[in-house]
Image 1 (spheres, rainbow, N blue to C red):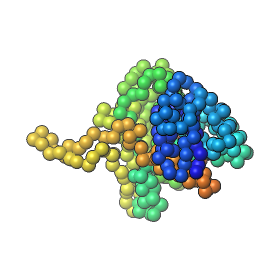
Image 2 (image 1 turned 90 degrees about the horizontal axis):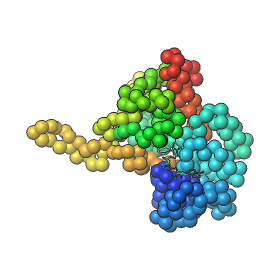
Image 3 (image 1 turned 90 degrees about the vertical axis):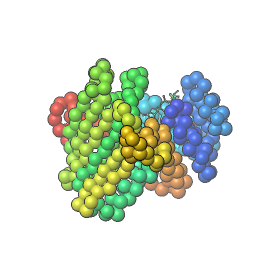
Image 4 (image 1 turned 60 degrees about the vertical axis):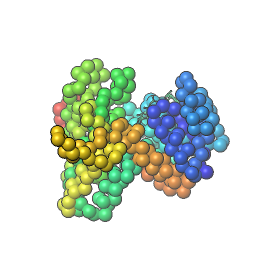
Length: 330
Ligand SMILES: NC(=O)c1ccc[n+]([C@@H]2O[C@H](COP(=O)([O-])OP(=O)(O)OC[C@H]3O[C@@H](n4cnc5c(N)ncnc54)[C@H](O)[C@@H]3O)[C@@H](O)[C@H]2O)c1
């Protein structure tokens, strides 16, 4: 049994905690959250212990692994504390918003031999994983272009946006990771555009709501990412991988597969799954299974802190490109 504590009883912590409970080879021992009744309420629902003290929870002898689902600015200190106590860690993205801090943390983790997995859940989405298997099997030949469409259904609350670190580091960071996952080469150059077409007041935070990014690898493979904070028709998540022997792509998911034909319209389908907690429910579950398997079997972490670092670097390059109007070398 892998004995797990979840730190942070908010949106993502609740998902992770439920997935630990659903995993038959793991045990959810405790949930820690210093604010209000969040830990107690979630712990009551999932039948485990609650704590207001994340540090004391990390230090418990009966905890093998911790999942960090806390606000981004707490990730590094909690992660390093857990690693220093010999605990395996599944840490939410981004590691931090400051790449200097991230580089120092990665060096510390490596020095301590830390076992940390970055929670880039989209890699574990069954469709995304199938696309990657198709690429690995040579179905598209040499990958030439990856096209990623990633649109949220609506703007996050203003309070969230004020502290998110901006669209590239908060939202597009998933897409930068998926670009690396599908390209299987490091991007070496980034060109990006950013606009405020939905909420002009985002200028107050130096943020954008509509961005397009171009990536290029050393061998010339290309990736195009388009991100919007607001697609009125719902959460739009698509990948297209084009290569010398063909292409593979996925469709958006819906709650059922039915289509309707009426006088006014044909082929009308259900709305898109909304939002990430529903759309990526399987991905979060499979992500935890992969983490638990790696920890139990002492195998390599399926997604590393270096992956988290690289995605953040691409986010920083994209922002620099928007601000300077130039392509930026990674
Ligand atoms: N992978 C994904 O799809 C995904 C989705 C959403 C959020 N996230 C990431 O997860 C993190 C949390 O986001 P959220 O939306 O769940 O936030 P949230 O605000 O809903 O939840 C965060 C919780 O952490 C608690 N907390 C604050 N400081 C803490 C500490 N030191 N120790 C323990 N708990 C603490 C807060 O009280 C709150 O309950 C962020 O880094 C975010 O980028 C990832």
